[in-house]
Figure (cartoon, rainbow, N blue to C red):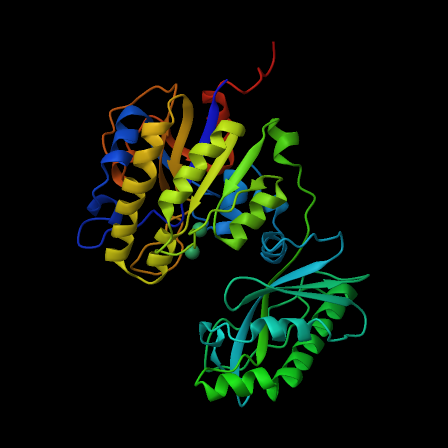
Length: 404
Ligand code: ZN
Ligand code: ZN
């Protein structure tokens, strides 16, 4: 039985720009050697033609059908900031934002953190009739809101319009249920009280004095309820650890019962110390059966539409992550792939299948480069993300016989 390392470069897959994808344009000797010595293929992380979010994609990659277990982003964000949800809680992903005359002027309050801890404490003192509220700040301008009480529903619309120069939304029930109407009313009541509390707040006066945008509203989206998810340990009888600097991904990993390993210098951005993450993964594989290593910079560069930055991030991952891993880890199953494509030309996720290479006790094919188009000719052919874990565990000789 071997150990398994799964490496996911977020949003790695792409389309052609001037005839090449960023992965094709990048110099990646280490990834290419994985392709050469391993078995390659393409993967639809959720389903063909479905544009995956990072959360639904990762659930699927861990072997959990997102159509069954995913009710919204909120619960995973909550888990990612260390909140333990109870059955019946509704959780939202939130942003501190800036409004003027009722219209949103910046969805991220200028990405400036000054005073947000103080505002978070005060928001937690807000009372709304009919539920308890828990508000916890996450990285930067982000936060999580949990509504706790009887008779709530996640079937409510977002207050975040996900645009600027527009008014924020009133939340509405998305089905005819009393629970959804109640939850929408509670969220609207919360939003009104936040706006009232923050309008003339000292923190915002200070922010104005130093020419910063005010943090004078909280926008909520992605309502969801905790799903009852069987743990990784129950499902696969494996000890598992996750190395990621992204709250949402840590949340998904925590919800399936993986241990989270924090790494100094890991930021989840293109400036992240990915080498330190690789070192942590190599070390974690000594004590865990399964290690999941997540690298976010590729997706960030893609959302910025920056081909050059994506290509450079890929080259840095090749040098600082894949290189050391191939040198240090000798006897394990190692998979390299992505959670979805994020083509720089459209700056958003797409359903284009992602390349995958698996190194270990595999039937090698004749693919010599780790790229979208080369992997399309690989021996794995085209697989569905939901089956990846089983495939990896089979290669690691950890899958029980079905039948006699
Ligand atoms: Zn992603
Ligand atoms: Zn993304």
